[in-house]
Length: 198
Length: 198
Image 1: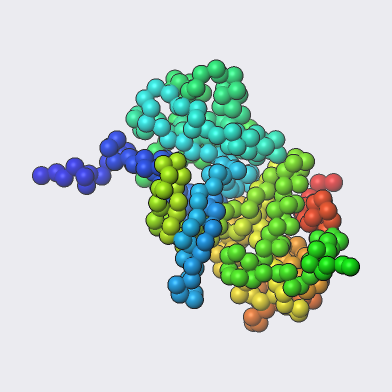
Image 2: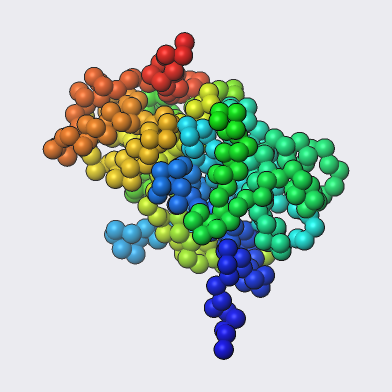
């Protein structure tokens, strides 16, 4: 007998019902985040790149000291980040990106991309860094890398509240998935931003 | 009559007694951190560089929802960071540094520099980024920028638990202070890492 809840899906694919979406912070995008973090650990361990997820900014209001050596935070609130979630270095280049995961079958709701993320990625581009979005359509289990300036231009031009899945198929780059690394997004980065150096 | 507590000191200098050192997180280095953050805001506003302090990593254990729209964290703990405090981009280059402030008159206690920070800055160097330490001796109100590989080499060679102030005077680079930016550390970065491009 097969217990459905313990099946290991190939290529990191996960059944829809396992996704959690408790609130803005604990659930949304957690699967994609896990895959990216695992890939970053792989890249770091093999000295390929040094890319980290930034901690979620939290405003600490009250701290208790039940034990002298350990501070216990008893009142705190999530703050809105002013940058993107990930940054680091790959082949001497500054890398910066935001990752979004949607269950929507046909489009990416634009409310998922915040003004401060757009502003930040525009500045990354201005200073000569490599900026992009990693967008996962979890229904299809497909994850695309999209150049930040390209997606930002599209967002600024559109009058819709969402961008069609088709657009990502056409303008994004499908990220190869596997075991190590789970999401080989640097392969796309290599092809997209380093090709002239080959 | 002059009220001592309201004097504005020139060049961002602050009297010793104003320093706070409540615990590892809320107090230590807060003055230097404030100066660096203000400088980074200045650099960002003038499109000189894009450098941010990473949020302090916090492990959230329990969240309440007193109101539907706002999560209140009621149990959480500080976690040990795996990287340095600051990173970003300046003139297409990846920048990464750690800042430390000591009240010690004659040396920097090495317990202030953690193994994960050394490891991280070694990797930054390996991947071709610019890594350094910003060290403030608050007694003298002097702040030095020291190349990360140089200080790491010194730390690995020394048998002492501290590095003398003299060493920083000789091997570090005094960071010019002012009103805008408060700590012009990119001036030192420019001279130290970009001079061959002039």
